[in-house]
Amino acid sequence: MPWKRPETVPYPNVWWTFEAPDPDREDGALVTYRVEDLTEDRFEDAIKLYTEHFLDDEPMCAFGRIRHNPLSYEEIVQFWHYILNEKITIVCYKEGSKEIVGANLLSVKMASDKADLSDLIKSKDMQILVAANEYMTDTVNLFERYGVDKYLTAYGLSVNTRYRGRGIATEILKARRPICRAFGLRLTSTNFTAIGSQKPAAKIGFQTDLEMP
Ligand SMILES: CC(C)(COP(=O)(O)OP(=O)(O)OC[C@H]1O[C@@H](n2cnc3c(N)ncnc32)[C@H](O)[C@@H]1OP(=O)(O)O)[C@@H](O)C(=O)NCCC(=O)NCCS
Image (tube, rainbow, N blue to C red; front, side, top):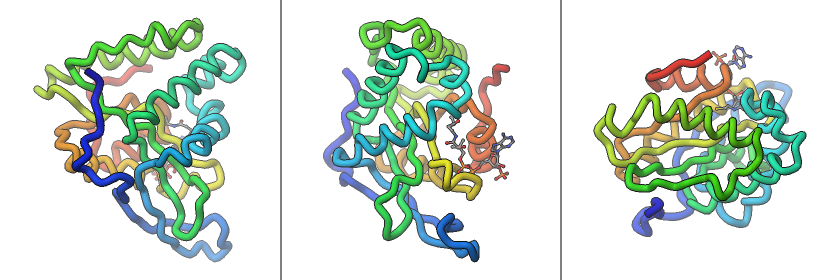
């Protein structure tokens, strides 16, 4: 059985607030941002964030030229929708604005769920991307290594280009702690595939189990 968000956890919930510079202010003043559950009415806007501010920048998608193969492109968008439907993806807003500043596609992986993506993924480029990710995950074997039957994982951290370099990805990652606590998850793990996410992850205490050039 795939994981289902328990109704006992309020939805949508604000998980984290922080202050960071506002790109719309020349004086570099700090403004408040909040990290909260993505709601269904913003699913399409979140997909837009990923097509416009992730696909060409995230190293594995860029290298796999996912945008340039219509089938791969369709499959990755479908995959993102599949993850959004789990209703645990988080999004970052600047206080007083509806613009999506950043997001993290979250998912709960369960040892008992043998989900098979082969029905969803037919294109060669996407199969390679999925296989590389699965290879990393299987090599580490988080369930055995940490003695857990489920953990919080992620399929993409994205910050709108306009907002980058302000510590926003680092703050979005900090929301993992309250989220794990609320859902009773003892572990979170991610295949961080860019230097720009590896640095924030290390900064807030993620431990490296596997490194692959
Ligand atoms: C990666 C990404 C989420 C980072 O967002 P951000 O809000 O700019 O990140 P932060 O400001 O919190 O931190 C980024 C850190 O990485 C560093 N960094 C970013 N790109 C770098 C590069 N090419 N080389 C070296 N360091 C780099 C920054 O200097 C910063 O470190 P610092 O705080 O010590 O200065 C954003 O660039 C993005 O959306 N990229 C496209 C999608 C992607 O690759 N996602 C990650 C896949 S898991």
